Every structure is written in structure tokens, then in C-alpha cells.
Amino acid sequence: MEWFEDWFNSAYYHLLYSHRDEEEANQFMQNLLTQLAPVPQSRVLDLACGKGRHAQFIATKGYDVIGVDLSENSIAEALQKSSANLQFFEHDMRFPFRINYFDFVFNLFTSFGYFINQRDEINTIKSIALDLKPNGMVVIDFFNAAKVAQMTANYSEQKVIDGIEFEWKKSIVNKSVIKEIDVRDAGVVHHYKEQVRLLELIDFENYFVQAGLKLIATFGDYSLAPFDVNTSERLIMIAQKQAK
Image (cartoon, rainbow, N blue to C red; front, side):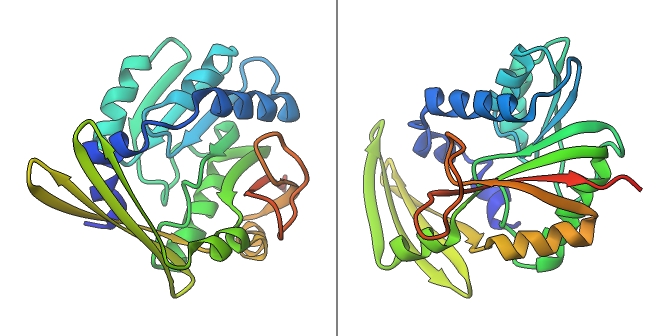
């Protein structure tokens, strides 16, 4: 089992990240929709959708939305949000879902770079391209690797949530951020790991070229300010599938 299959399917993962700012996330989604200006009834794929909060927000704007995720538990909860224009499925992002079907694909909040094998990353981008209609667009929201690398050295933190103790340490190994997480619950210690590759803009540009996608815009935060490699918190990219 790969680390993301174990950790993302754990109740501890959702508990640790339960503090995420819903208002900020919804404002980011609204900013993206304003930027992209989808026509009515556009088809949207939320790739690595988790429990479906972003997919649900997009669906409330009238678009036809499908959310997919590898986590069985996340999809089980997301299915409770289903509606006439909102569906959820278990799916591995390394493979196409519905070919030439979507007008937009969203991959949000650093839901990429999990794979040890670079071929899996390339296959994911190629699968996104296959899922898109000609001239369709993908949004990938990733961290700014340069900024993360500056902040990660010797980083550790502890937190207690609902009586459960979390302790984690971050390090950089082989151009990846490694987060080792210990969870102490009722005297029992559980160990998990996160591993995300420090992918830079040039890496994504190379992947896009291989998949027949063209980078058309970059932003550096959730308000869609310009991207600056030295100061931006995020690397948000919009790429378009080239019509043949």
C-alpha cells in the first residue's frame, strides 16, 4: 500500500486537517470560476476531490460536476453531497476517467506530486489531457516548491485534537518533502507519512508538453495574484488542451 492510500483513508487525516478554512477555499473557487468563465452546463472534473467540498461548491453554480478520489472513505462521505448535477466515484488519477468529456479539470490544494515514480506523474497529466475536450482547461493548484524548501528544514510541530496527540516532523529527501506523523490515541501510537515531490514550474511545463497541453496562466495565491517564485505561497497553473 502506498502512503497516500493509507493516510488519506484514515480518520486521523481528516481530524488533523479539519481546521482548513472553508471561507478561503470557497473564495478561491469563486475566483477561479470568474477567471475561467465556464459557459452554462460546462462539465467539470474535481480530480482528487476528497470529501467533495469544492465539487459541491462548483455544482451550486449550476455546472455538471463529477468528483473522483482514490480514498474509499472520502468518497463514501462525498456521496452524501450527491445531487442531480453532482456525482462521486472512486478512481485513480493515473488513469483516464471519461475521455474527451470534460470542459474543465480541477486538481486543487496540492493533490499532486505524491508518486515516487515520475512516470506516474506524467501518466496523470496525460490522463487529464485525455479526459478534457479539445480546448478544455485544467487547473493545478500546487505549493511553491522554492518557498516550501526554505521553510521545511528541521520543522516539527505538535497538536492535540479531541484528546488525540499528533506530532510531525518535516524534512527534504531526494527533492521531496517528507512529513513523518505520529498519532497517539488511547496510548497506542500510529505512524503515517506524507511525501510530496518539490515540483517546480519547469517540471509542470515539461509534463504539459508531453500531454499536448499548453500553459496559459500562472498565479501565486488564492486571490490569483501573479506568481513570483521567491515570494508566492502557491503555484496555480491553467493549461489548455491543444485542438488537433
